[in-house]
Length: 509
Image (cartoon, rainbow, N blue to C red; front, top):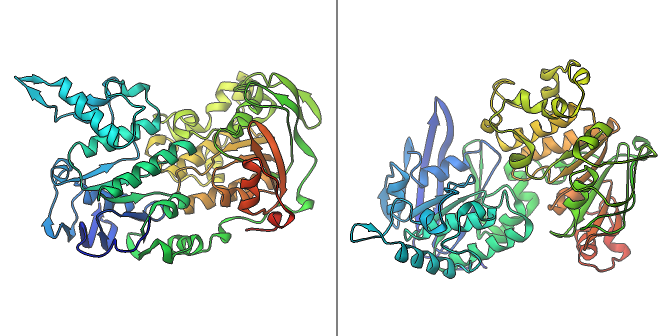
């Protein structure tokens, strides 16, 4: 995909001087945006920068206080999403809005079902849905499938098909890959590119800089509700983009690595550990050290995390904690030994979203330990302060927090049990750059206090920047170990089963 020619001719959408306030707080300050047919226009910035508000004004969810919106050169004002959809503008929200017990076809045509002789024409509805699915290359989805049986990626496809059923010309996508696995992200990439080939203009919001550079033709940066820059992707580097977003370079996001004096004795050691998905896993993590675990999707990274933490235990081999063999047969056994697991799916597995910040922070402590230990006083305000959670009060429901603050609550939940070993799986997935830095500082601070950290991440710059050593997995095994700061090429060669040269292990961050 190239930028050449995309900005020739009239834009599909022209937004000028868009301003919006909520309760006296200005969230957008005179923002301009052009969106052309057949382009992916990435909209980036920290949480609170105004990205979602601008997107929702375009899609009719909110109305601007001042400024103008033009669609194909004609002034428009949408007072509802239905009005916007009728004009060919749709939005795919990060939180999918589908009815799980209804079929794919019923969700796609919800509220606009074709009717024949006074009743819903199911045959036509399913045929039209099948045609749209086929057009997008989604042959693995049937119009009759109940939505609740679909994967997250498949549900994302259904949301897009739902928009296309209304002859959409402008599609806004809010964090579409936040809950997707690596192989599912590739499927979405293909889908977005096919939409561009059809001439659909796509406004794309994402915190993942890799996909911003993979997909977008142009990038617009917002900060504190104001426009910072809008430039072709080819004119920006990752470092420049981060500096526009947060006012500092990419390298400055990562705290200094541990010195040899800060690293203690081996805290966690696996010897010859094996289960159905993993073979002969040998690894060690010392007190005060962050060890990165890299590899392609399906290589076994999360399987190691789940086995170490007793979710899917090892069937053979030895786990040692502070030099002593231990048996980790369940998550509760792991917690009682001092092994904590920050899961990659914070909303599905890490939090009780309708419970308070306080109740979530004490969730593991209350569930895993004896009544006497549970009654030990926990200064909850100090605990939340230590991870810098921003909430109205400890009684606020977690579902109303930003993604970054939700992740901090997950970390607080594990700090409440004073772990010796912390296994973190995709610790910054779906949070903005500023919140990522806060998580990095928190993890490095825990390491300095003697916690041994095993960190899994699909973002190689993050893994390389944070790790004191990097272990790379391939096909359920440890393929090799790299010292601090290897090149991305070295990591990827091991991840794909190839050898590395000495020059590839030189400092990259």
